[in-house]
Amino acid sequence: MSKAILVTGGSRSGKSSFAQKLAESLPAPRAYIATAPVIDEEMRERIRKHQLARRRKDWNTIEAPLELAEALRSAKDHPVVLIDCLTLWINNLMFEAEKRGKELSEATVARRCKELLQACKEHPGTIIFVTNEVGMSIVPENKLARRFRDLAGRANQVIANGCDEVMLVVCGQTLRIKPLSI
Image (cartoon, rainbow, N blue to C red; front, side):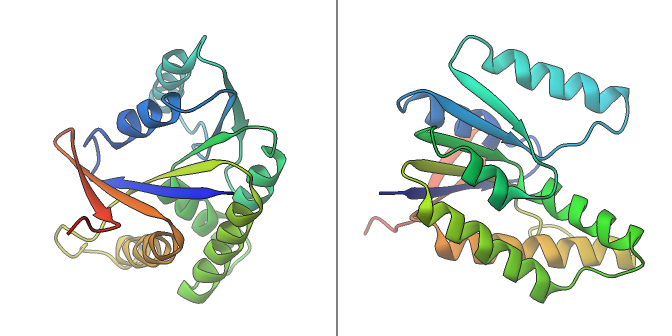
């Protein structure tokens, strides 16, 4: 039976570290589905540091900047899958749509997220998503940034709704959002 967990928080909040520790507390082997493309040397160095943090801990990395549902299905032999991160995935989808002269819509994002959640249901293990919470700041001053915020917010809502658990990480501290413990 599958279990889906969403870990969200602001940039540099500690969400990726928390998600990795959570994944490493579960049985190996583990798959890390990476959405970050190498766009410059600084990003290459960030990716290298993340890879070093997973070395010798039974991780297999799958690069999937666009097709997350397919990547998750390809990781069916891994009882634990960590997908980091959904906001970069949205960025990548926006960029690909723009290259085709299209504009990515919230409806398309919601559909892609539902496809991803369906792949989660088919997976026999635990899937952990990492995403940035983008709605707790000022309204961006330009149309493209507002569009990204809206699309990432839609993705986060759809994925959170389909997950069994949602965690918010702030200043390295984790707060359970779903299920509520009352």
